[in-house]
Image (cartoon, rainbow, N blue to C red; front, side, top):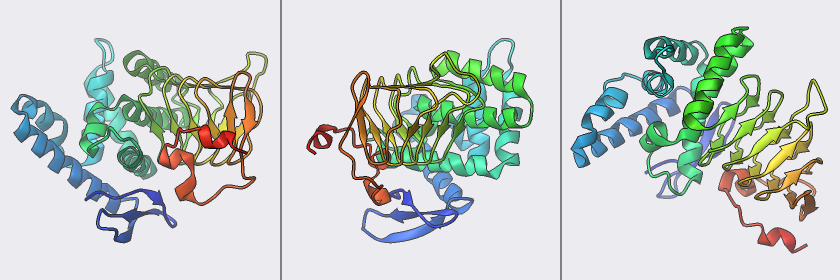
Length: 297
């Protein structure tokens, strides 16, 4: 059984197991312990089914006592270079996730989001090990912490390596919520003053950029539960309201109200209920990329 992520109470999530029973779990640390136990069990299973991966799975998952150490080790080996040593990156990531418990809590929320929303995500361990959108986002969380601490050259180095390795370019100053899914993730660009809310799903080749004419606060603000379709471009200090959808390849230059869909180039607004529905209806949570119903007004 695995939990189905919904927005829960303060400091937790509500889960629905495959037998229909509901329970509330704290996001940190109990949920971390549960997810980490699932990851280790899945890695054991994969090692037994595919012996060629046994050494990799042992080194990356099974030899580590915690999710923080496993994630730090994996990110360090993914992002290292001949002049940026994996040992340095490991210490950097481990310190980030250990010194700021909210980062690891957000990581767990991202794992739960991928497992719940992405139909190709069949296990937590596969997301941790192979989903570059997830990995890019966790590296960004560490880079954002460094940026906030004034260690900006090091934060920019991480941004550059993530862009080189994963094809995802998120400025370290950008603020990203929890329970975020970057699906496929190739070509995602997020500008410096962008804000992405909780429970947002963003597909590949999405740009949250500036218009090129403004300085200061010049990038989009994405509300909770928003779904941004593949190839969409959102430019300027515009707001996409809670539970809104941005259609594939749309070019958005205006505010999008809550529970409204933006489609086309330039984008026009269709559908909309005027106010967000419950969390279970938010497109960012259910990855509902079917826009047909939004045309029926």
